[in-house]
Length: 306
Image (cartoon, rainbow, N blue to C red; front, side):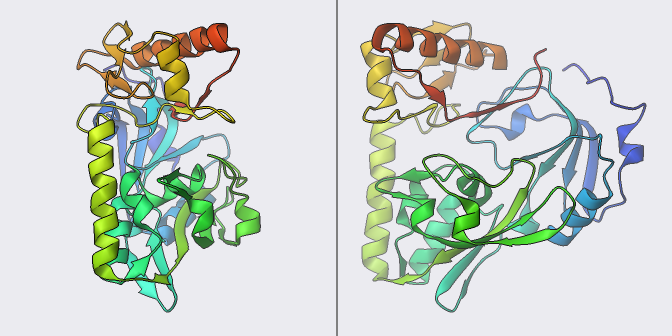
């Protein structure tokens, strides 16, 4: 692993005091589902939203801040990430019923939200069991699967802006459209408030189990992958376009297109982040050449090349 050149001699010495944990030159590859990528100049694990808000407010303006969840839909380049990487942990993972809503911290796993909704006899959130990642990531990209998206269930959200202010967001401000949110990239989600539609626990559990079975039958869920690679273009399916371009099983270095589902890229265990990104760009080039359709990355790609 190559250490990043600091934006100062010791970036960590320029940062505010925190109740959470700051780590220099922290390995990020093990924190992502692809299992690749360079280090963070500084990794910050905040204790709770207030700790994070004070940190953002006190961080020098020239220091970039990047937030990651569980790294399910994320590719970090081999050169790592300059500045501070924020990883939300236990202090952001609470899930609780509040009247006719379900509140979930941005660090809560989507599947845990679905399972909590089942225990609380809340219907309509079963689709989250089929989305790898956290609620914060689901808000950022309006995640969806199995007929529903976040836009269908979000009543409100909370985020910290780039001045460290905690902001309450309504659906109009969130601006959720297909795999997109209108909230500035520099804002950090901390919580979502979701609809609590009454339902029967047995029926909800059956739906969750059906979604799990569908995923395992159609997706390489046990392989080192980043989930769905490209967003579906209007009126088409990304996997079908990739398959028609003859790219099922196509390989570059240690990365290859899944034989099971063409819209998943797999790390064979020897891939670099560069291998995976080059593979994705080659897919985009060949699909555009074959069909005229330009695929858009659904996976978030961040950091610097080695």
